[in-house]
Length: 211
Image 1 (tube, helix red, strand yellow):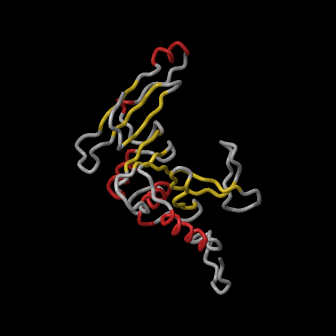
Image 2: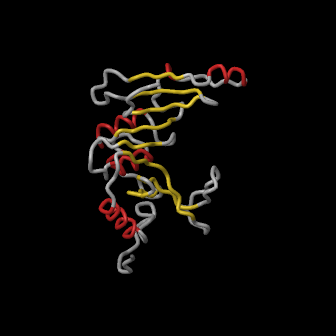
């Protein structure tokens, strides 16, 4: 895994240099060993670690425990590609104006060989801007929930959160939707929301019907 003759690079440039040959080999082999289905997903993964390390992430919002985090492209339980979060984000995508998070995910999508797969995202990743970038540069359709603010949702689909139980019951099941027009590079972006126990927002470039 390691060559003792190689001088260690700076941590800022290559924090995972000790295990990088293994990570690169896994990313090379996984695309050869698995044929991606029509639908896959991108999400974060955590490799549990109990010791002390500068790059260990403190996980307090779920019971997974602390560890090293990566963004991963997965299909039916199979991890297809990974990009560790302590590695510098790919500069070619940063220069396009993307955040480090979206730059890493676009790198994952660039590993997909066929066009028009559907990638499911949770609200950490999904935004109108990223839907457009994935459509134009990777020919991948995105679908999933998204956060309310700063994600490109039009005001007409946003629903006010109710406090009283009677008010919640009166609006529960309400659906609002809007379709982006006059953007030739992104013809099918649909923004929608549904009121369940609270409003939930969605962005999709593969939506075929709203009901």
